[in-house]
Length: 251
Image (tube, rainbow, N blue to C red; front, top):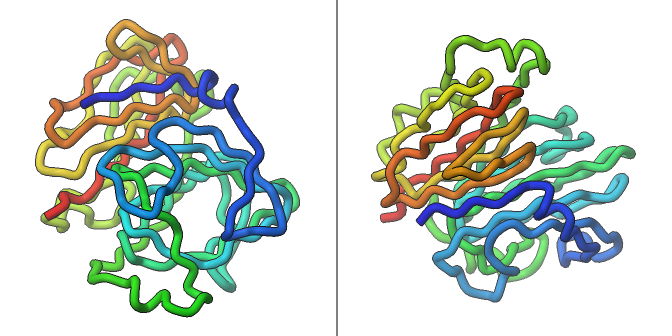
């Protein structure tokens, strides 16, 4: 089932919250889809924008479900002794695959967390008992930068393009994939077929689009289920660049 959320409307509901991953600092959370973790995995999409405070740290952890994280503001470090990750970067981690810590810079660090299932809750790897919660996983973990177009170049595009963000992603028989779709003003385009995957998210990274008669500007979000047809939409007057995250099929 397709779900579509207007970005500015979702962000208008931003709230300040705390997390067990960072108990000494608050961050801001804008809910898009799904609820908060309840201790069990729920077969409903879960998506939210998290905006970390300056120099906040989230400890290393893993989740029970596959997830994409799309960094859209500020900068920070993901993992020990790593170079800084900037805005417009995709992070993917398979279920039961540890990552982190995530440490924000002095300018903060903002990112979308996108899950095709609602997670049971983060499992910290510095706490006793975490090994008992680990389950078999392919342990895939990717970071990929997305270079976005300037406004006049995007609006003036004459063709659409679909760029793969995961190296050699066609090799994965479970349909894992990530893409950046670019389209010029007023172009009608379709994304990849979701059937046989675990579903897809479309996140507007630049410009805007029209879907089923409604306009979706910057940071709007669509979820396309694994039984839905390929998503077809029309780029707005400014053109559009959309991140597409395709989840692996759940066996």
